[in-house]
Length: 58
Image (cartoon, rainbow, N blue to C red; front, side, top):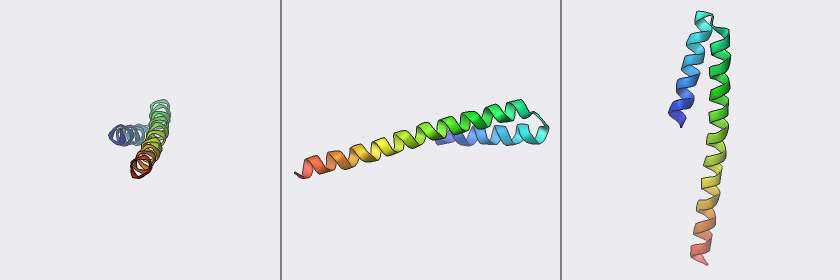
């Protein structure tokens, strides 16, 4: 998922330098959405791992 985020940021930067503002804005928006999804999933997995480890120890 991080590869997609980096790819969209690179696409947005290239589009920005070439003057394609609509494409650049769209790519940055997609990168932000994917980053938000990544953060939610990352913290959900961290929480679940700690919860499972706590259950196993008790």
